Image: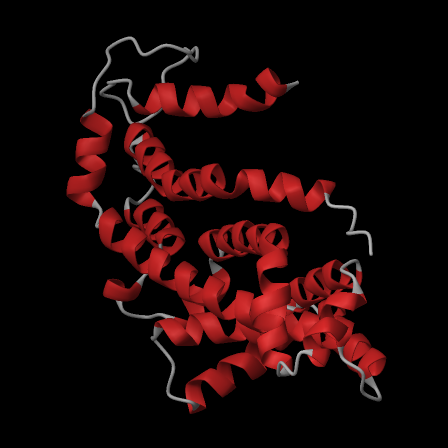
Length: 261
């Protein structure tokens, strides 16, 4: 089954290093390049500002992850361990946001971003996703529910502030769920097309997905398949690097079953 899943990706990488003059892919498909060459990558880097698009997307992804991790972990910790009236109602209100389709929120969010002066800026792309991502808050809340209440009580007895208890006691224990948030958030940001295309209108700020769409649209139907494959591989490399570094923490978060008191 793993080979079946990997087969299309192996073909994608192999064909991107295959030199062919026609605009269409070789037929019948071949798993090994007939003529090994970096021509497709050279043309992709020459004709498309792919490095700029990647750089913009990396900046957006990093800032988005920082904001999401801070807000999700702090919110989840407060709702899980905090003792204040109405916290369950607040959680229900947060989760109800997940039931509203993104398309119905599109126009109000754009009007807010435009009036804040964040149109065509990276923060205009980042803020809506950060402020409406209830899923990550729910993940952290459930994760903190499995952590012993004795940790919180011990911090209170020692005279630590609530933020210090969060930062020094609970946040280090959240590494598995933080890693899960990181990989899910990076994938969401990296693959997002609709919202960045609405907010960004200057080519120097385009993300990788907008760049790929514009390349395919500007060729008037004459898209060189080899160059398109090379661009796809270049766009996937950063995601693969992130997954390699955090995949062990994702496994830990899945296997995590709580700590005993």
